Length: 331
Ligand SMILES: Nc1ncnc2c1ncn2[C@@H]1O[C@H](COP(=O)(O)OP(=O)(O)O)[C@@H](O)[C@H]1O
Ligand SMILES: [Mg+2]
Image 1 (cartoon, rainbow, N blue to C red):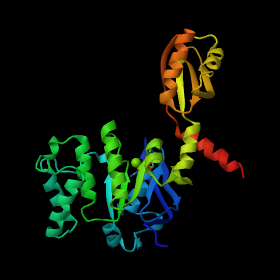
Image 2 (image 1 turned 180 degrees about the horizontal axis):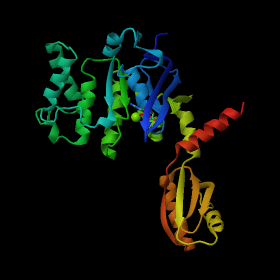
Image 3 (image 1 turned 90 degrees about the horizontal axis):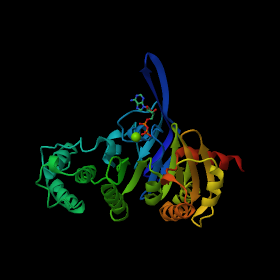
Image 4 (image 1 turned 90 degrees about the vertical axis):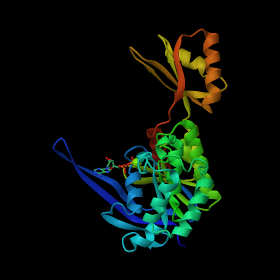
């Protein structure tokens, strides 16, 4: 079977100097992934895991030290031009910086189509269709500097599609976006996958986003792929670490309060308590934090406990890594 993306023991080491000390980082460490044509593939990992480095190698922006990869059947080292013609690239962290702010959206796209060697008549048709797809037709003559962040993202997505590539690399496309633009961007990516049949390789450090969008998820840590799973497996892992934390104002008997709160239907169990001079925090495992928070608040009120905060406890990658490591121990 020919894959959209296939990597073979890809490895990249960086050497840098920090305060005069040599620092060696294996950013990508013997990575083997296979992405099927048409798949929405998620690469999930904390900051520094190596996601961007891996994507940059696949986009032929940096060279690997070892190993190689095939994009749409083309070897990135032996056939870089053919490989490049097969994908579009979008890097969220650059924000709108890769556009010309003093040009309008249409002219930005014309300029990039020219750089990509797209023949003029094809380019004009494609630009029109892309502006429509990304709901930018009305604003196409407006200067990009007047665009909102969400609109700039849409122009950059359009830009990645100018040469009509079958594969899209989306490196943290929702990073730094407000909630509404992030939701819009996710919808657009889904449409690119389902309506236009694009294969999408998507990176994120947002577990819920990856679970929601992707057909398959690889989890990356310190340059290595440590798990390859379905979104339902990821969902299961996340369910186990969904939590709410309650910060109690002053407490001599935190454990007793925790037990009382755990008696709320929305709470599954007490995860842990932190009790020191300044912080008194109870972490409770819940099925759904949005339903649990009002219930817990109600309980706190009826018990007359003084509380300074109730909030969603962000699931941490460490929780997931610990779970994965435990899973490996059990045959
Ligand atoms: N050009 C570089 N020089 C030195 N170290 C780098 C360079 N690029 C990335 N790194 C290091 O490689 C590791 C992986 O970084 P990166 O691929 O950006 O991770 P992610 O995208 O998952 O946040 C980090 O430790 C980072 O500091
Ligand atoms: Mg990155």
